[in-house]
Length: 564
Image (cartoon, rainbow, N blue to C red):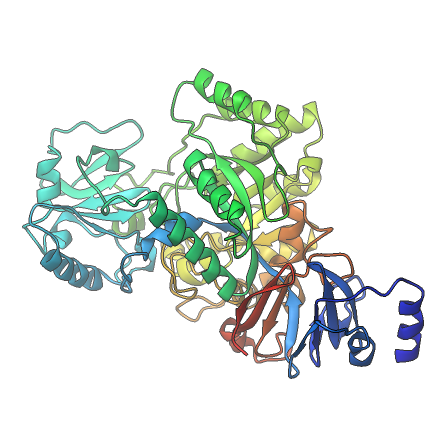
């Protein structure tokens, strides 16, 4: 076999290589499922894979040779859904505590008050109620643990405020609800502190001292390095505007990007339609504009809210448990729709005319259905499959939604770790039967829907404890086990194989971002993006998968992280 490999090499010019990794198990993920001992790199690309003897024969003076010691090499891992700058700034100045209960939140507020001048705002970092031990929104009474500071709790689309914060903001029982929002009242008719899609009523709230441009650059650079240490070689930032783009471009010019980055432009739709369309038509950005390190990916609209705070636009009402978990006052409430269907079609049509790939944040089932309705309207004008447009999140699927996605060639951007973290609360809201279509990953994959796994990382630097965890092996483990924090396996028929889970973080997201010809597998001519891990992904005990540690991350032939 080695002799035949030498003959193959001799039929081509033998170029010098910059790096050789040998004595390992190189999972190429090619069409044959080949696993080799070694891989050679030149000019940032894969030159060859094969047995040790053949690859080591390519070594020349100056070639960096790395003995893997039997370790496994995977194609560089991809997380196509993070919010890098938010995550970067969240712990740039101080480490966040684990806020896993209302008691922990109260303790943090008390400690924060000791170092915060009286009268200044204290804002609890974004924390999602379904993940609190009490499974409920904190109220004014909970946040009144200090009375010398205005306190706000950031629950994403729903906030809470203490008595002082409400008073400063002039929020009383007579305050009218803002459009699409609600000042939630208690049994006494007074505001209980919960502001559903109404945090804009809070006056003067500020999460922290403003960051300078240099601080933002330094924080973003650090976050990208942390992603590399988690084994990631490409990330997709899923909500950027002009200021964010400028930061990424500055880092790119200065060669300070630790990982490859794909940018999603999220446009503000909360303004007159002529303004939105004008910005789309005049903005020079479009899909795939850029280079191998930094480029634009998708045009994004936020269609509904979040399941974590009861604003995702659902097919079914949130019901009685919605009052406890989200502060819902109407048991028939189904969530919030931010953009009307005809407006979404008009916006998407303009964006597609500019050459954009399209997506929308959709968590609730009805929001998914509306997005697919719009995709179908666009598909009738011109096939949408070539754009690789996709459903972002798509938490609450249905058999009909999956069939429509398959028929149109729509891709899925999913967050499998939500199965672990959020199903315990969500099943109390909607019932276990309705969890059948909460990320039905195996059904999606077997139907041929390209399914890319992502984290939606927003807050924190710890890959396992952040909101949301960005450890790719955590996502793979959850896709494989579907085991919740309560130990329940939710619809085991939707568990995927280890091979499928790995593809969810390699070749399938590479396809979604139009990079399958240069990423996602370890094959000649592709980028030398490699993740070396500390154990055998395919043979280690199932519950060890989430504990797998990257010991080396290589991006374009450059070592970005090494711990071996």
